[in-house]
Length: 99
Figure 1: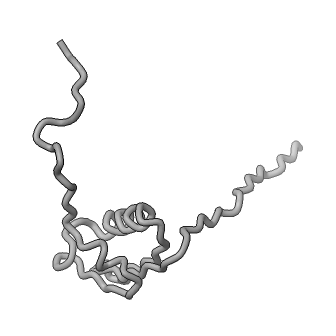
Figure 2: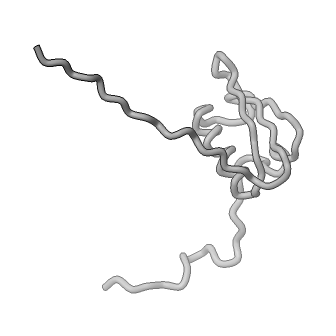
C-alpha cells in the first residue's frame, strides 16, 4: 500500500549540482556561450533556463541569440528584479455590414 515518506531515499544532505557555472555566467559580465561547446541543449531551452536561474537569484538578465543560432550572449545586472508588464491586448472585431 502507498505511504508517505519524509524524503527521497539516498538524497539526504546532498546539494543539487548544476551542469552549468551559473555563478560565473551571472556575475554581471557579458558572456558568449557557444552551442555544442558551452551547452548541449537547444538555445531556446538554455535561454529559458538562464531566465529561471536569474529569477532564482533575484537579478535581471539580458540575452541575445546569435542570428545563426550557434550561441547566445548573456549579461546579468544586479539590483532588484523588475517585472515589466506587457501592454494589454485589445481585440477588435470587424464591423459587419448587412446588405
